[in-house]
Each structure stands twice: as structure tokens, then as C-alpha cells.
Image (cartoon, rainbow, N blue to C red; front, side, top):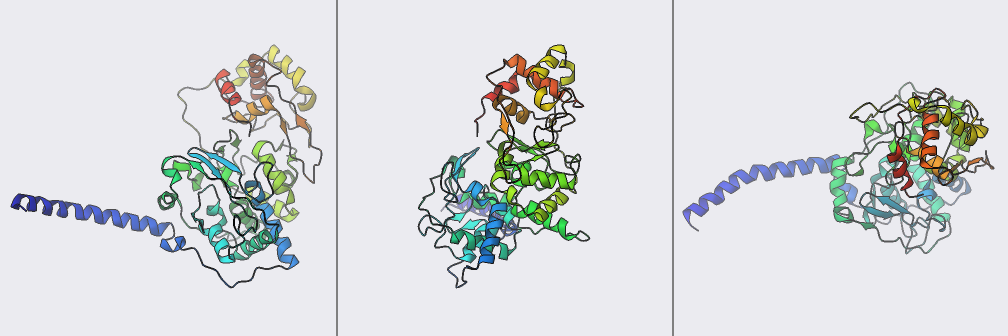
Length: 435
């Protein structure tokens, strides 16, 4: 080797060593921050027995329902808990796994420790789990609750149901890349201490932040689908579903009493609104089974959350819907809406949601209101409301001009003062998938 080449090699070594060292330090720090290497070591078979007593199985069934296991792990028209439900993402489609005790395609060969590890660490026998699975919320669960859920799942009939292959694009299709995602966005955490809070508030915190994983829909998303802890109840578009989950805090829920909100969670209807879209499904498959004390606990916690708002920057002040209210729009409202929602938008408690002073009607992102008017809506059928009222679709009955007149009428009347809707968002919502 020539003296000049040797000198260059030394210079590369001298300059490169600090850079490589810095990279290794950063990687080490980020790896430690997401839980270290130990979380990727899935426990082996253990000797712990799986409870089979009636009390544990009953408790496990209740917890699994409140955690909505069946809602995500049951394909449309498929057998309960057999997996295969499709979850569209910005990077392709994920499919949920089989939670029945089939030994080959389900969890029949899993140990209790392996199930706990997957629930709380997000690492299963197959490797790191995609964050569509709410392990960042389930990390808050009590191990005895997880064991009860596992016992109940293992008591169900086994179903042979292989999980369809995910159809993800690019780096997202490489499961090992999830290690990098975790290093950037996942931080093991415990629930904040609730000094001075009563037992109901603490139970509500456990259910809302942990088992119920409410922020999965009601929180805003950041880079690569990550959750933003500070905006976890700020509301926003549910990824790839075309619905908006509203904010959850004491300001957004100011019209609701604790009892009213608990009633809504259990029945899907209330004095101030009805559940529709994804929330109707959650109430039907999960929340209607809440014990009364737990429903009241969730309500107590939600009604105590401080408001955190995310407001987009606008190039110019939007036109106000109130400026488009006229005799023609009032006539369309009376003809098509007033029989159910009232001449003054007052609605009817338990049947037809009020439109007056309704934050959902006046939401900055009007996609929910537009979708409901276009395709109709129905509150969920629940034990507390077995025969809910429904709203018919108007998307094919009225012209775009008539639809816009009605939409802007309700957004600019009855105490509402929202930005106007024009033809462009109406057309975008028409193109959204129905699910």
C-alpha cells in the first residue's frame, strides 16, 4: 500500500470513528428507551396452569368484551375471535390474528407468559407486533386481568383459521423494521399516579387509558402512524376509515352529565347524541356490556380530562355557514329533517339526536355529518336500546345543491356557527368506502 493511500485510510478511520461511535450510542439509547433487547426475547413454555374456574372465566369474558377483542379479531361474516379482519393502513392492509385455542392457527400452544408478553410488550411468538395492536395501552393492564382474558380465550371453541398474509408495501412489509419504529415511537410507561383521586376515577383511568384503548381512535397520529401522547384525546380522522373521532375531554363533553355519558356508553344513545359509524360498532360489540359502576367510572375520568386542541392553519378565514342560511334552506330543512330533529333542532332524547348547539354538527372537519346525511345512520342495537331509530340516506334522493343547503343550514342555525361546506368536501366524502 502506498504511503498516500495509507494516510488516507488513517484519515478515514480518524474521522469515521467518532461518527460510528455516535451512531452506536444513539442506537443504544433508543433501543434502551423502548425497553431494551429483553423485550424481543419471547418467554418459553412455562408450567403455570390456565385457570378453569367459573369465576375467572366469567371475569375474563367481561374483560375481553370491554377490551373489544372480538371486534378486531373477527372477520366480517367470520367466526368470533378467529381473526382475519382487514385493517387498511397508509402502507397496505393488516389482518388480525386468530385468538381461538386452535393449536396450529390460533393460541392453543401459547403459554400464559407468552400471552402476557404479547399484550404488554407488543412482541409475540411471530415477532414484533404492528402498532395497530394496542400494546401501548395494554401495557397498563394488571397481569391477573391478562391471565383471566387468556383463560377465557382458551376456553372458547378452537377454529382452524390461518391469518391472511398482510399486503404491506415497502419497509412496512419487513417486520424487523418494527424494531426501528419502536425505537423512535414506543416508550414503556405506567399510568400516572392518581394522588387524591377516588377509586371511581382511578378505575376510569384504567379502563379508558388501558383496557378500552380509547385513544387508538380518539387521538391524533403523528409520523408513521405513531400516537401523540399529548394529543391522545384531541380527536381526529380514524386512519383509512373516513370517520372523525371527536375529542374527549371536559370541554368537549361539557353538555354531558356523568349519568348521561354512562348511559350513552352502555346504550349508544343519549340526550345529546347517538353513536354512529365506528363508535356504534364499539358500543354494540363492547361497551354495552359495561357494568354500571365501570360505565360511571369511565364517564368520571373522561369528564375530568383537560382540553387539548389541535387546530389546522388556514390560508384564509372560511366562509360561515350562517351566511348561507335562507328561506330556501329553511324550507328544505322543514321538509326533510324537522319531523325527527325538530323545527328548532331540539331532537328527541333517546331517539333523534339534537342538532342545536351540537359540537359534532359544527365540527371543523364535517366528514361525519356529511356521511350521515349521504348514507344514513343507525344507533347500535344494545341491551338498553334493543330497537334503535335510524336515519334514512339522502345521498341519492337530493341533488348536491340541496344537500349543501341542508348541511350548511344546520351548521349555521340553532346556535351552531361553523364554517360552510362547499361541493369539494361533499364529493370527497361520496368517494369514501362505506366501511
